[in-house]
Structures are given as C-alpha cells and as structure tokens.
Image (cartoon, rainbow, N blue to C red; front, side, top):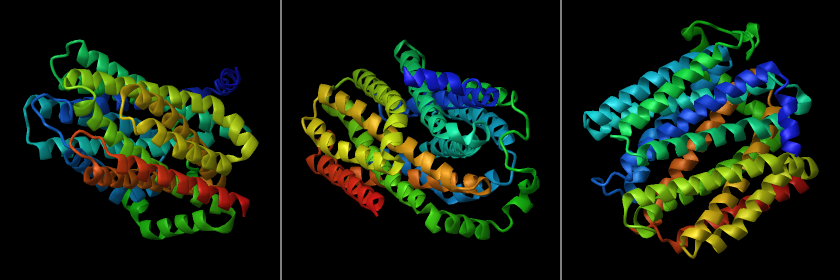
Length: 420
C-alpha cells in the first residue's frame, strides 16, 4: 500500500518521528477537549441549545484569536518553535484544568468561555508552529507526502481523542470536567514529547531569533505587510488562491457541522445521549474520510497538480453534498460525512503543500497564522449564517443548497485559475 510505504520512508527521519509524536498527542488532546466542550454546551440535558447559542459560543471562542493570530505568526518567525510547542502545551494543560474546575463549580458562562477561549488561542498557535516546522524535518522531495500524512495523522488523532472522550463520557464519567482533565493530561504529554527535539531544530534560523518579547513584537505591522506582499507576489499567486479556496471550503464545513449538531440533538433522536453517540459516529466516519484523503491525495495531486486537485475536491462536494444531505436521514448523512471528510482534507493537504512550497522559511510562521485566522473567521461566519437559516430541528434545504453553490464556485474559480 503506497501510504504505508510513504509513511515508512518518512519515519526513517528521527526528527519527523518526534515532531509527529508531538502533533498526535497535541491533536488527540484537542479532540478530547472539544468533545467535552460540545457535550457540555450542546448535549447537557439541562441546556436547550439553539443554532444561535452554538454560533455565539464559536464566536466567543474563535473570533478574538483572529485579532492576535497575526502577532502569533510574527513570533513564530522570531522564537524557537520547539520552545513554542513546549510552553504552549504546558500552558494548555493548565488552562484546560482551569476549565474543568469552572465546570465543577457551575461558574458563569462568560467565565467558562474565557477559559475555553484561552485554550483555543494557544492551540491555534501550536498548530501553526507544527505546520511551519514541518519543512525543517523532511527534505523538499518528500514535503508533499509529509503534508499528506502528518496533518492527516493529526486529524485522525483528534478524531481518536474525540472517540475516547465519547467512550469515557458514555461509560459513566461523573461529569464533563473529568473528560477535560483527560485532555489536560494529554496536553502535558505533548509538551514532554517536544523535549526530545533540540532547541534549534525547528527553526527559525538563528539570525531571525529575537528572544525578547519587545524585540519580537516591534515592527509587527511592517512584518505582516511584508508577509502579505510575499504571498501575493506573482510567483506565489497560486498559494493566495489556494488559501482563499480553502477558506470557503472551511466555511461550508462549518455550516454543515452546525447543522449536524442540531440534527443530532433534536431531529434524528430525542435522547441527548443517543444524539451525542450519533454525533460521535459521524465524526468517526468523517475521520475515515480524512484517512482516505491521505491515501488518495499524493497520487491525485501528483497527477493533476495541487490546484486542480482542490478544484476536483470542491466539485465533488458540490454534487454529492445536496444529494446526501437533503434527505436529512442518518445513513445518507453518515455517507456525506465520509465524503466531505475526504474532500475537505484532500483540499487542505493540497493547500498546505502549495503554501509551504511557495513561502520562504522566514515567512512561514506568519503565513500559517494568517491561514489559521482565515479558518477561524470562515468557521464563525458559517456558524452565524447557519444560525440565521436553521430551524429549531436543524432541517434546512436553503442551507444545503447554499453550501453546494459555494462548493461549485470554488471548483469553477480554481479550475479557471489553473487553466490561466
């Protein structure tokens, strides 16, 4: 099997193995933490969640990071990325523990959201660092394969972490706080795993490192403008197009996720525990789609080119999403979850490859932080649109059709750009 052979080749690089271990532990913890939050906010029997409440929670958790994300990118291009992974993981462990205490103490919602916001902000910082560091641990020839396997393995780890959280909760955990503490322990393990790498390994180059915070933050606006100019220069136009396309695909994924949450909570079953189990199954099936994307994308992107593969993924979703989504039934939705997992992750692998190949090392941190900011804004925007369009039970034909039209627009735009 080609993917197994590629993975064996990459695992011969000791530094790649160590970076991958940090990613797996970190994103596994993300999966545990996110499922615990979803269970607490959406599936608690005492809470009657609405699409508007879900959208508000997403906005509180993600939009503030969009203001600090570009600054994080500048720091990733100035601080040792190994240290970012170490201290970021330790900080998330502490903040997640604080979230668990707030759950146990029935703290006000705003305080709970502030705690969760801090975990999410640091999490995005760490993910951007992992992506920026990847070209430092593999050679250029194997970068596309590494981009296929490493982020996909992380996504699968997040799915496995979410599955573990579902099992722990449904098996009789006393509270969602216990699940959050499990996530905190995994965050701490990720920090310890980063110690296996040398401080200088993940870059940036020593000449770019500025240990003092004031020195690193000074000139941030100038650095960001330089980063945007670097991205939009003619040799890197494909990277800018790929980022725009992936942001729209992320918008579609966010809208469908909110719809799925509402369907699992109210339309497909009346029991919150059954709804949570169905959501877990859907996310697991979507994770299988991520794995399929890791197997298929290196071959498809090699044949078509990354940009054309993004167009194919979006076009496939445009056709299959309404066909499987409009029945609003469990089995078609599970099939759709697999296919959308495949196409979304396939497009993301291609986008990561285009950006990493086009962007110089001194700019990668800030570009990937902007990448994450675009992800967050698109996701929150999708949740807001879904809140306006979704009825109480989550069945919305207009939303399904709107998402299909956006997918079709992305496919058409990327295909035209590649032809030019």
